[in-house]
Image (cartoon, rainbow, N blue to C red; front, side):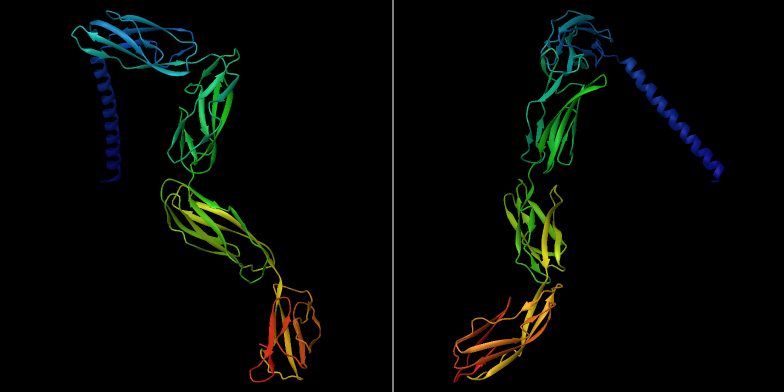
Length: 422
């Protein structure tokens, strides 16, 4: 098929579709005309606004010209049932109570045809509102706290008008609702709040008339899910490159359903191990976090705990401080020494994490008759070496050579009096 024929074919198909649609609409109209309702509320029109205290006139007819022996109108509470009429068209009246709650109310005509058939009309809805703006809106509850997902709570909102009248406007057509955090809780057009997930939200009710509005809001607390404790971890100062003792984050399933903890990851100079998996309601697991600073100063990071609940990820902040330090060693590691002799050691100090302070060398805990000296007695700049000499005269027992972090022991050897330093 060439392009011209193809274009002609698509134009014809388009025109046929339009013709079919027009015929369908026309057929529906003919059907409606051929099958008029047996009973109908002719007035007021659905959606008409009435004020408290006003009288509502209702006209009922039979567009199908059906004869009726009794006809009445049933109204949603507080309107109730009208008196009965013996034929149509018929007129009925209702008085709107002055203390009525605002919003839409349904009216339906019911009748018994001369044939004995019961007939009901399509309903209409009337809207009850005041013509003036309220001075203030007040919710019936100060807050909403949900216990579980999918739980619903209908909001009740009262309006105080300038004349002092207080009326329920929860279902008013002039009131709209919104949620500040729909991931925690949603609210529909009728003010029904539905819980979704843990967190906080604020549900707002706004009454708007002629461009002016009055508002009120209610805080909402979402249902519990996974709860972590503590919400943040702080580690003590730790030497650069060394590992801290682990600290534990407890993960609690506070919901009423099982939750799978899919994993935990860390950022920064932190690592973790955990015992988590599938958590039944009320059970806990632990995430152990360790700090290994890679540089001097404040170090920050976080733990991310992923799960299959509405809280897809939980974040716990981590802080710690890396500090500079030094290590110390002695060469040789062991010597045998007899009474009256001496032992020489080379003591080395190595900087960790940029440590630059002076290290002063000293010995404490020497046994009676033993002396020790260092040359030099201190090492500057954070690293270097010194020679230590230990002299034993009539000494017995153990000697402890203490610096900031380490110690060595000299003690009697078996079968004699020599000493060794490990």
